[in-house]
Image (spheres, rainbow, N blue to C red):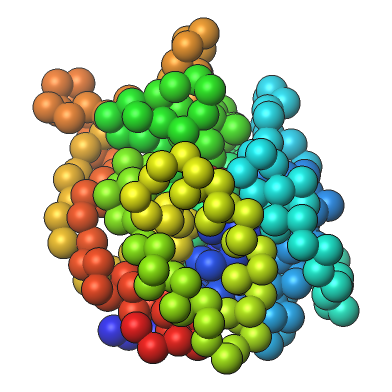
Length: 310
Ligand code: BDR
Ligand code: CA
């Protein structure tokens, strides 16, 4: 596995946290753009700074947009806690954000590292949409785009049933990205459901004598309990799965290439991802929809990021 170079856009978020620890353990990370999403921007920014500290890194953290492009949207504090990190009352990071806006940092880093970067979108696509509008040639300068988002068969995780959170939070932004980015990897919520992490293994990894394991054990306590209480068979870590695909492209066992569009209007379906499974619309496939990954390799990437043996 070649060590790749990552630019991450994120709304931390407990599963974002695991993904960001994985990125720092297994790749070079050139920056974190931070958006509102799981909770408000003040919290997601503080959480991103704290993660960089926990990872013992000096990755620049760029604050971005406090709301979606068009319509305000509900957050996911009921899953992640009011602060997005399980309300543990952690000591704030000593680090401070960079002065540059996240969208401007994406454009600059893409030029400076022309053709080298894997862009990983772990939150609403607000920043990527703005970056694309400012520079429609941006995709030419990015090696790969990996998006965590969507529910490709309509089994979403929001109150608008077919919509997944990241796409449902800012559907207009997702529409801009899906229409403007020629080819991206899509890791959706339904793939997440198929690749849950075994609870017993996670508990074991979290016992590792490592600051990353201790921090993640604390901030994920609430979501682990919430997941078990809902009767789920395993821990769902959507952003960690997307990060595994970003770090180790060969982890993908099966995938399908189709055109994916975003529903913007439906009273029941706004934010749904509509997949042309049978290629009836004659539109160029824009998404490689990840179906299955090698679970053993996924587990190894997670365990390694917590300082644990798999
Ligand atoms: C996505 O929504 C957020 O709550 C998670 O962080 C993840 O990015 C899963 O639907
Ligand atoms: Ca996220």
